[in-house]
Image (cartoon, rainbow, N blue to C red; front, side, top):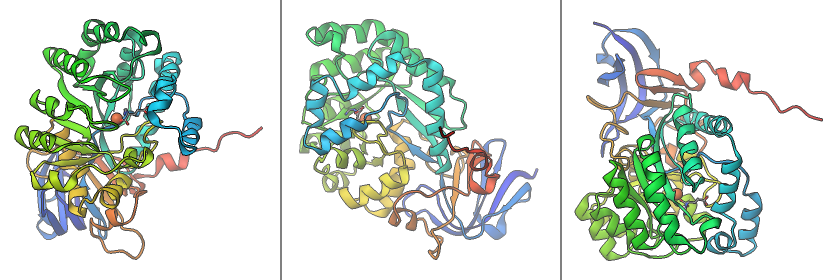
Length: 416
Ligand code: NIG
Ligand code: FE
């Protein structure tokens, strides 16, 4: 039986395994699966054969931490922070996350879905085939559910992994009744939202939720079948990383203030450390303890944390480069960080690598002009690597070489 689709002559194919760089490689898909991968000249016959000479191949990229479903603008907040205001001060004064909450509560489900789709299409054009998206800008049962429904309603080829983040901030109307809000998250939001989500996340930090509040929310989510994750040790150390790891978290994220006990807890429980270099830079935070994580053998993923406040940055390639420059990752760690380890952060052993049993997700990119077809140049050069082909589930779904439909259709906004 011939395969459905074969790419031949890939200059270098990174398989998502340590040291997995194959030269002059080919890859074949059939019935939505990878059926072969190896030296180009041994490729099986296929109904459709494409010449990918000179390109660089990687598993479809996985952005494992985003807040890509939002409405409203926070441009003024960016300027206030440049002028010296801190992220926590702005949140305490009812801005920051809470200003996005006001915009999301006002937005219709259709409007949320449309902007989410536009953002996902941009990510897909860069080769990102799976995107985790968090709720957390509704902070009331109806609006949290609306966000998750917008994620389910999106119709791009990107696979969205929805996460419930009702414990993202204390909404203004509960400012002096925080225990009542935690109660609402557990008794009303979670039962309504759990069927629409895969993970439960919490923002445990100064100005957000305490360790005990966060633990209660994670435990309630686990009882409803969700896999826990946490925004951990970002602005201030709280101890949530070790607690979440012990609760079976697939990942803990940010980690700029992670301590030695936290590092050992992640190693002991096999928890992935998700690094978010763009949020670290936007908030002027110090780098997380990458050397200690490496020494302890903790798998490190890298994500955009795309959101309108702490990380208005939606290019996963850029995040990979920043993780090297600002946090000290090696190029290979960064590549694993946006592929296999990102899949693991989502508890998904099929994502972020290529081989028998993997997802049939592939991105093929041309190197920058004059550069060799080597995956490492995509980390050396920062960002903006538009894919030649993007394959999701064994089918070509985007890319310049795939027809360029969207580029041709994009229109400038009307003037006057
Ligand atoms: O991952 N720190 C908390 N949550 C997000 C920011 C969300 C926002 O500012 O809107 C983060 O950085
Ligand atoms: Fe986040």
